[in-house]
Length: 357
Image 1 (cartoon, rainbow, N blue to C red):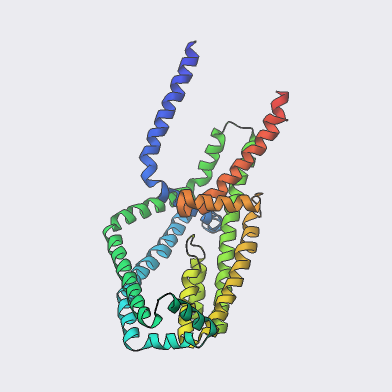
Image 2 (tube, rainbow, N blue to C red; image 1 turned 60 degrees about the horizontal axis):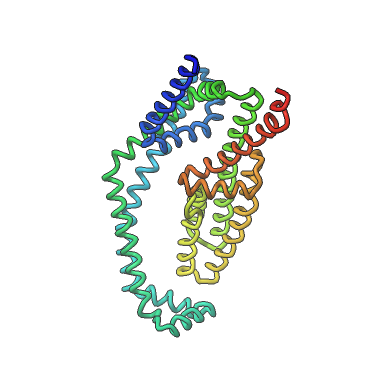
């Protein structure tokens, strides 16, 4: 074995060891770093527009970072305070509802409908008395919810230092990726030992996939907010505009989604205005969400990725399972980059340049 071969083996072995150690150093911060990179990708078009007027990349990046800081910090502080307050008041309100006969009214309203009477009758046949168990169940559920939210709020307060560190890392990664991201991508492309057209195909696929997923999520969230808000307006839910905005925000969440908003609103509507209006709102939201989630969202996300709808769907589900919320973007990106690599192999090594070399 000649000296040059030994040098190469040593270099790549040493590089692998250092890469492993580097991963160990960064692993605790991978999630905030990934969110910072993703946010920078989303904010990149805004940076381009702002830089046309300011013409200083660092200052433009700092302004956008400061705006993001305000947009995240202020609502988080407000929502945390509201969460604790509402959690403490929940058990008191549920107790008052039971003591003032509110559940009796709810029970009577349900019994006047065919569906409610059928459910109560079936439960009675199995030894479950709604009149006796409903107040207990309501108080137990309210107490559990209140205790759970207060306990987790306390736990979050204890871990506030960890949250601040993670958020600071994400914000730092966001700023530097926003300012120097183009240089990082260019350097990464230069390090990739592929033909220029293959590099372009892979990196363009990654960019268009992330853009398509983000565009699809934003579009469907807005559509969900508009349709649910319109349904609440039609059926007489108070504060429908606020709830529509909340639905749009909840539509971006991978777990729960808009159901976190419209299901409680439906229950309130059934109690306050009658179950016919509540059933109407349920039908409205179910049909609207079925159309948006099953037709509009796949089409919006698929456009530009080149992935079949099934592959995109499995990529999102698998990404959520493996990476958590980041999997919404990581799953489709992995699917799309793999498909691009397969196309590069077919062109360069299966029947193209690979046979002529």
